[in-house]
Image (cartoon, rainbow, N blue to C red; front, side):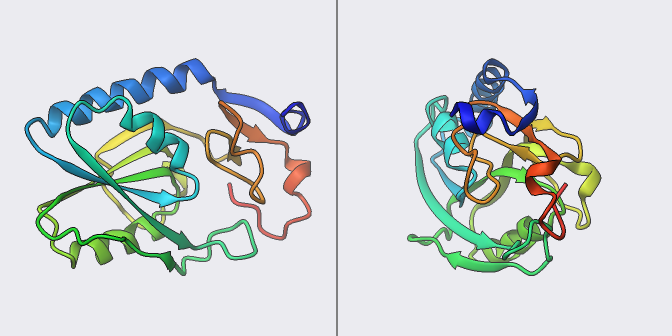
Length: 188
């Protein structure tokens, strides 16, 4: 891990702040869904660590399911075109659904997912995201629960990656520009 940490320009959100905020989100969600069972839909791969930690703080019955999307392809700048790579395993009709995201930036992926999931007629559909990069928003989306608002920097760690690396960092860091400089369109 030391080798990966050398690629970090700065620690944006330390491990203890992440743990504290995820616990707060778990308590808030549990209070809002008191006496209900919810289905957590994690958007793979980046949200897995957030989902795992968030689940431990929920005091309400919950199930989990997963979706995988692609909007980046081989570049690091969102194309705005979203593909479903893995769909849900179970139907959500009549269920209370909470989408669990690692980061929302342009809003294209989330907007597309909301449209798809709304057609499946859940009882309710809400969103929790660990990170919100509002200054990059191109499509308006309402997010019910936000862990942290982050600046337009290339963030990694706690599930977020660059070229499938850095997910295991226990904090949110900013990747050094020289690491992704050779990529044509780096995401913010």
